[in-house]
Amino acid sequence: MRADPEGVRADPDGRWLTAVMHAAFFLLLGSSLVRFLTRDQGDARTSSWIVALFAVFWLLYVLGQLLAPAPRPGARPTARHLAWLGAVSAVWLVLLVLAPSATWCAMPLLFAGLHTLPARIAVPVVAVLTALVVASQIRVSEGTLNPNMVIAPPAVAAVATAVLVHLQRQAARQRTLIDDLVRTRRDLAATERRAGVLAERQRLSSEIHDTLAQSLSSQRMLLQAAERVWRTEPDVARGHIRDAAEITSRGLAEARRFVHDLAPADLAEFTLPEALSALAARESGPGLTVAVRLDGTPGPLPARVEAALLRIAQGALANVREHATATRAVLTLTWLDDQISLDVADDGRGFDPDGAPAHGEGRGHGLPAMRIRARQAGGALTVESTPGEGTVVSVAVPLVPVAPGPPDLPDPLNPPDPLNPPDPPRETAS
Image (cartoon, rainbow, N blue to C red; front, top):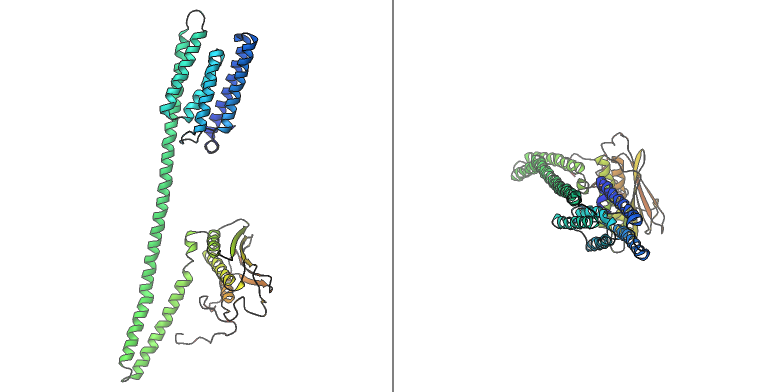
């Protein structure tokens, strides 16, 4: 039986109290029926009706626990539960008139009312039940009236009411406190996040001011100086231009360092699986559905690896949407003992990896950039494709420290065209 399917499961004490209450009801109901059959039984026809009423009382109680469960702690009782509570109380009242043995079945009903009804309603209900118990005790008493018949039921009911109402109010205060703590923690996390964003903006503004802005300012001054003496002192003007070119080279290196150090924005707020899910949702649209699958046990990853995998997924999906004419793509992120891999598969037109650039004839920048990112993260990228049968782009990165790549790797923001290799580096800025 379930009196509170959510609150009981979350509260072991509530489950224990509910089980005790049910056990007490069935024990008292059974003992009341036995007493009726052994001491209070009248003629056979009336007795059979009373026994049937005992059975209806038991069945109604059981069905109420299944069909009209009690509300969660702090929640308002449902109309169905209130109807059940009224019906079972009415049946008990009829039993009390016909068979005074059912007197003590009021105790489980008393606890059920206290647990599910607001205190302003539960206390009067308990008072009415207690008065009925006392009246029934007086009605069946023989000889001199025993004062305990009048005093004991109200005393027990008062103690039970005081204890349960106190526990109910204490539980309400605890729920309020927990809600406040959760809300405070959420607000604190949001405040810390905003503070972190502001601090990072401040750091970047300082970095840009102290490097790029100063570099651009120096270039402007040198070029203006060169322009002023271009006709009268050409050698001095050329010197100014050489100095400006050198400053430009340093500024370009600083800009590339900024881009290299900054992680993708999605990874600032989400984990890699969440960022891939967000990417799939953005790329899905008319004509293309993108799904995400996770295999293995997720674990922490270096920031560089997360950024590389996300950027590779973005590049692969860009190729799928622009060139593959696919209707479905799947991102599969797999954790193994010694490596993590990402597969981007589509059902598009495919291509010949050995005979043409991937999807983008004439562009040729997508796959080289992805290979560079994979190599910088310490991994490798492979492409499997057949014309008419789709394409699978796979990248595997070992989860062990690897030696850094050579310092002269091409710039991932401007990857080289494999059909047109770049010229050797020069002294002046390109």
